[in-house]
Amino acid sequence: MKRFCTAALFFVLLIAAWHWAYQARIWSPVLVPSPESVVRYLWEISLDGSLWSSTVVTMKRLLAGYVIGLLAGLPLGFLTARVQALRDTVGVLALGLQGLPSVCWVPLALLWFGQTEGAMLFVVVMGTLWSVILATETGVRNVNPIYVRAARTMGSEGVHTWVTVMLPASLPFIVSGMKQGWAFAWRSLMAAEIYVTILTGFGLGHLLHYGRELNAMEQVVGIMLVIVLIGLLADKILFSPWEKFLHRRWGTEK
Amino acid sequence: MTLATELSAPPGARLAIDKVSKWFETSRGRVHALDDISLQVSEREFVCLVGPSGCGKSTLLNMIAGLEMPDQGSVVTAGQPVKGPSRERMMMFQESALFPWLDAFGNVMFSLKRKPGLSEPERREVAEYYLRLVGLEKFMHANIHELSGGMKQRVALARALAPNPRVLLMDEPFAALDALTREQLYGDLQRIWAQRHVTIVFVTHNVREAVSLGDRVVLFSPHPGRIREEFRIDLPRPRDINSVEVAGYATRITRALKDRMEHGAGI
Ligand SMILES: Nc1ncnc2c1ncn2[C@@H]1O[C@H](COP(=O)(O)OP(=O)(O)O)[C@@H](O)[C@H]1O
Ligand SMILES: [Mg+2]
Image (tube, rainbow over all chains, first blue to last red; front, side, top):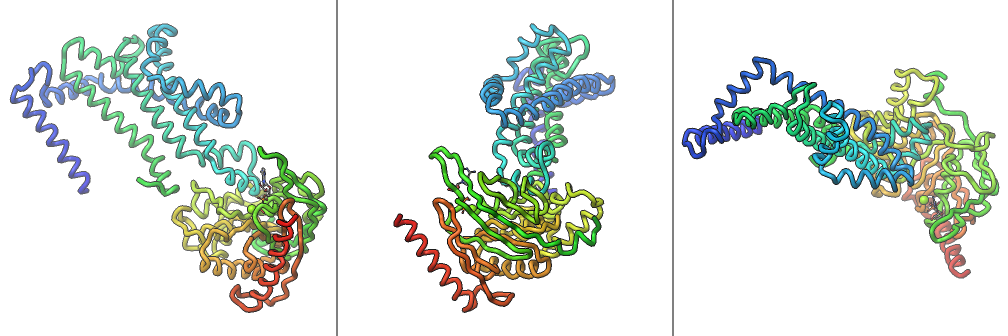
């Protein structure tokens, strides 16, 4: 409760300072909109449904690509950890491509897929995949071999060992890889949506882009706020439960 | 298979190790880990293997467990040649090897999950029974990192006993514990053994530990690993590690151990 009050106080003060800066006309009102106008804008787009629909478009793209990246990355990571030949090939490729800022996939995706959903999906998958592969590989290679020996004496082998021992044992690495993959995917998707208009669906990036075209600062700031909130929510919903589980079971420092 | 048979003492198993040799290929060349080892362990016997590190004690235990195969010779338990791991022969390691992603109960359940012929409620009942047997009924749902070293080894013992093995293999299970905790565990292990009467092969490099636990102490020497001498320990149970009798045996065995080492170094 005390922590909540501190946080609430901080944000109230932040908004108050913003309001004051607007009132004092330190900057042009075209460049710094009032908090009220931002709230009004957000209210309007939630009433006419466009906030909801573009959030859905963006989240659909993000989740679809992310799930594909995970489903491909986990087994690939397991395999690269196990097969030396794959480590020397796919492993090196993953290391190189993970270092590539994921925004850099946007031009390539556009040339390959045109202005389609395929391009969006591709960008998100590329953002996710390499981080997940690398984290899974590291995780599996760090599993204490004694776990596998113990499991074998208890009648576990093959796929059962992979699913019930290797996977949970490498979870601390995998979860941090999933988090990184999510962050990369989210950033590159926003970049893609801002750069290119895709007629099959207007996402949040698209709204941000039009805010700039129309010189509507309250729209730009409002959408930025929404994007920040989605990031925070995703962290709470997608990753917090995993991290709590890891803290509780492994007893790692908060 | 019924719950009653699961919870009662298992049928005994003889263990016959016949002329076993084992080599390892390492970066430093071929290591002769075990040389012509023959050892008979009778039903419900408690045998301790003692020797300096590197004399192949863990390797021998792994071969009985079926985790490794001998290059020569054979390992036979209860009349069956060992071809791979089995729940008939369970192993306890120096590091508890408990799974941190499961709680204490989950760890014990793991060794029952793949055991056929039991329903889920029966498995739970068996797991609870063994956690109670090692005195951890209050810590069933504790996370592994919250347990002390001694408690971890108790969970590991419960996990190893849960599938009702006929042979229990213990590889320096108490080596990492403090003396006080260790002594408690000696008492508990002897109590549980008296109750369950499984065949136990116990590896240690602590001679007093071996004397206070074993019916027989088998002395190993390294390079290559060989059996040097055997000592039958004719002391009534339960034994106290601090008793004069235990100290007497331990002195004799330690002297033999030192002789061997000196001879070994002289060659
Ligand atoms: N998997 C392995 N690969 C290579 N060498 C091994 C392996 N396991 C054991 N050794 C070697 O075999 C010898 C016996 O080892 P070990 O059985 O662990 O001895 P102990 O348990 O008595 O200390 C040692 O020299 C050790 O280095
Ligand atoms: Mg050893």
